[in-house]
Image (cartoon, rainbow, N blue to C red; front, top):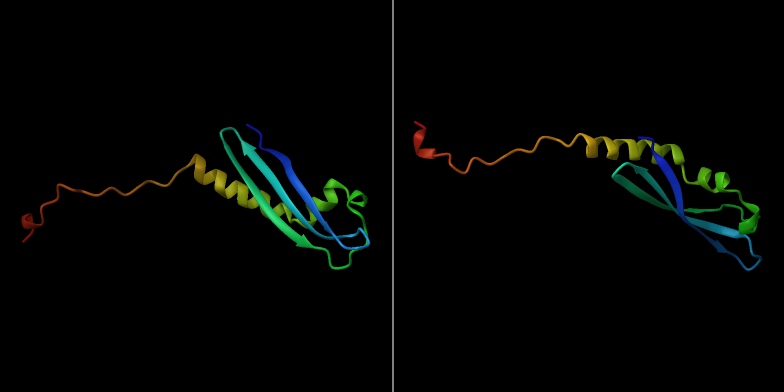
Length: 98
């Protein structure tokens, strides 16, 4: 099944001039029955644009999408291939040892 990505939210914080000083983003990855939403805030060093002056790809680029891709793949791999769990032998008799 293909991994899907979708915007959950992108909230700009603006200064008195109406220029974005920070973006807070939530972005969701889904693969079948597994999903994970990443959240990140990124400050804009030199605020120079209103929220409408940004494109989705530009905002996503601020968030390091490649890192999110890598982290989702790792989380999804653990979901699909869970580690073998250790079990406790409650019936072990210590007195059976010399």
